[in-house]
Length: 214
Image 1: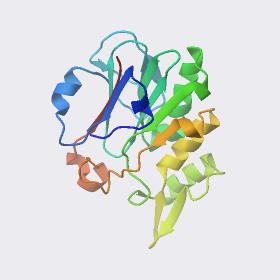
Image 2: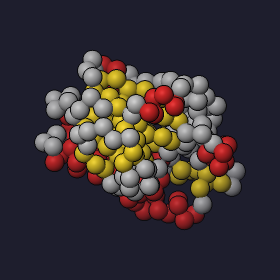
Image 3: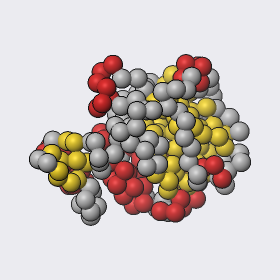
């Protein structure tokens, strides 16, 4: 289990990016989970529900444990201290392209939260050391994030994509302050404490990430 140094500063909040050694079953049963369809829909929730269909993110001001499952995608937490609101978002490459992060910020705006009042943490995910992609996906990201340097790099005949650079660009373009953004430098493809679909294939488990307002 690892945590964000930025989010750890808030006494009224707890959060965890769990690894394969943690008891996922017990934690999941106590949490609100969503279907994670690799889309951009984010829902504001106010009551306990074990499973919410057709969304990739949840926002709440209630003492609910919000849980995201990943195995290379980005688990992203948001916290608005002034309004005491927390969010958990699943951001795979499809979600990043389709705007799941921007939509999360928009939902916070609807709740009268300014983007520069948000603290964001991105947990362990596959990094550009391990994430090779094809030409079609490379073009999607270079077209979408034109001004991001080295969002893709070529090594030994393969193209590698940097998802965290894309996520950072999406968030800062929405008004998130760079100093309020914590990206954990842990690659699920390299670090065997964490599950990785790229490394383990269809039989891979899922890493659980949980955030909760106390």
